[in-house]
Length: 267
Image (tube, rainbow, N blue to C red; front, side):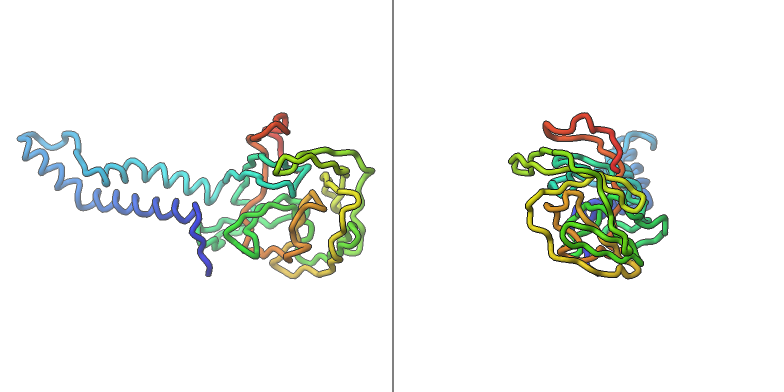
């Protein structure tokens, strides 16, 4: 099992270390220290505990670290959108909240699932660990679920033999991650009952044809910015074990675009 030494690892390690130090002091050190301090001062027990700095630090920070670890591992985690692959749904500079319990309760660091709580549905915007480098988190839309047949050719998407149609083109302008202006067309796509917006860039070379059947435990994911997204069309399917959580809403935006979208749900 690969373990990636990221923020979750250091947070878990810090929580364990401070917790162990605080517990050992409570069981074996505190009473003796207080008695010694009282004897030296000629006072009764119960006065202020002058603990060594490491013990004092651990006792103070362990509850905070433990709370952050529980919330971040099992409840929700904030993520920043660094690229334009999910435009127009998510813009560069968006900060989103991802619910970690949506696709199962998993242990921190090892990511082993311990409780089943749900599975990705077609149309979900999901965060997952990039299959080619699990230390990197990706965010895409789940387009195909286990049992689906997916075909993508000439910028046309077919699921289970049915072409996924979209509405008429509407002009859409945006700045990419480097601040350069881009012009595209926005379409409303109906993903077998789930409506969402996508972008296409007319004249942009089409990605090579994709044709596959999705096995159990895997998902086909695509970016909403269809011509500017590196996704399952290039690197393959997302394993269920790589799932992190479901994007729920935008809580902040860092930039000049989309300030009115703060607080909006991710659809």
